[in-house]
Image (cartoon, rainbow, N blue to C red; front, side, top):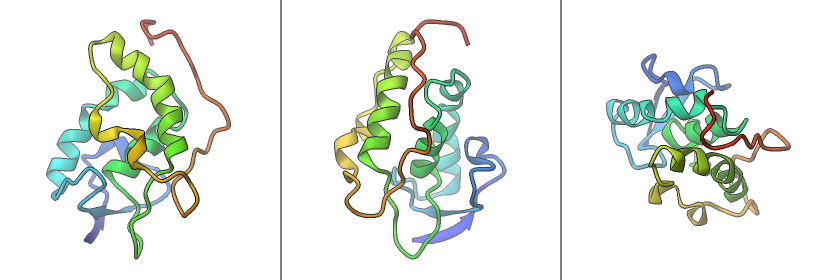
Length: 129
């Protein structure tokens, strides 16, 4: 694994509280270019504000904080974001990706990235932002 500054082109993860990310990331992207390309497709979902921790969730995957060991996101964070955001994705014909299956993340007994907000924003799936 290697550390690098979060690229300027990765708009998804600007101002998230840290400046260095680790590659490969938790989605097995080996290069910054690959991570940037894949992260761009999630920006429209953030505009819809489906969950207050959606950005934290996505950046934990695309641009994980660079520490001496990998910090996975907590399953509870994944489940909360999925519950709020998957219906909006489905409205536009996008299923929740298999690579984001929440069962692959730890339950929180160890160190993991947890939800910051204490609730969710559940809008109707097909509303305009």
